[in-house]
Image (cartoon, rainbow, N blue to C red; front, side, top):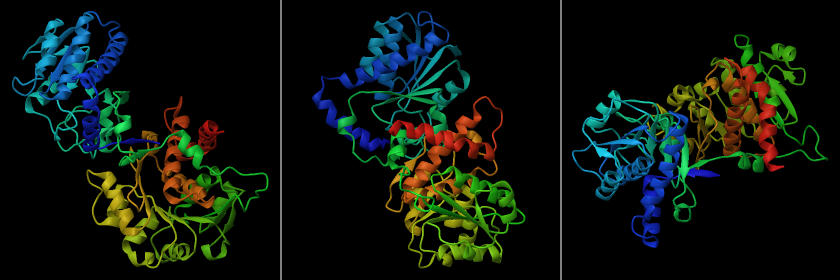
Length: 479
């Protein structure tokens, strides 16, 4: 499990490490790694470091110092380096002297085009937004590649919010650890590709980062593999209460997600039973939850409708002593009838997008998506999977995960139905709510990537069809 650490946690780690090193060593490590990555980019475009044009936007702090020391290394290799102090004349003095000795120059009039722009404006201690001069230069300079030094300047490092002008990087070189802005909110979109430079911080970072990031090994470790004595019931029975006469497709997609999961038996209950029978011969269909028989977990909500029938089916699922995934119309019904959750003690996973979140909570998630998801998880004593380009999963104990595998093609009708059915299948095997939500989002992202390969468009059905292979590839790392 990887993680993202707050700016305060990183500063504490740096404060512990620096007395153990020669003066300036930490900055030299950061600058060396940044220069290595920058040189590699220049070898790709324009194809060489010698003669390449590099512009450095340098703030007065250590972030600017990192950029200037790295630029000095590039200048020694023949790059034409133009450094611009963006806050008056204040820059890191020793780094500035090193750049000048290496042949770089300081200027107020940098070239309006360059092969590489180094964003050394603000570091993890900077407040959101950019100095006016920096914003103006960024708007005017045509850079083939923009590299952010540790974080894209102008973003909120700890929440991922971008409330004002900020850098949009092609690549961010992070020192020592991910920060929340690399994986949360709009800032994650401005980070570009993320590369790490190990500066020795790991032993000094808090063992429990505020944001946890799963990888293949985590998913494989959580997975319940069937044994030789298992049968379809012991592998897990999942129920799906979804769809209606108006929206039968939601039912078909939801059971498709459930069938792709590890449960051994899928029951469907609802008004779209005939459509499910035609499409999915493996699924046992009934007209209502009360007729479906026992299941170890349920999905309720996609395409269900918000009329009296839909409310009755939601109540029927919530009355059962098993975990439940609540999505789509189920969330809308809870927003209208919050009393349906009264007395509910079994685990729940709620899977809202932003508008559904607002119906539940009374306000949109806002800029701090991790905190918003954690707040509603605590209020309702559940797990919340807040969908987005970087999906957030928050447990009722305050633990927050962010999914690293999201793809833009997941923004397609029905993908949430597939996710809900798949997630319920994981719950039916005994996986706890938070892990099930994390694993479902992670694997759906992998499936979307596989479905997208070589294609212009991807549908929810494509994603469901790609899930089994995605699962297999992830589980192989834990075999």
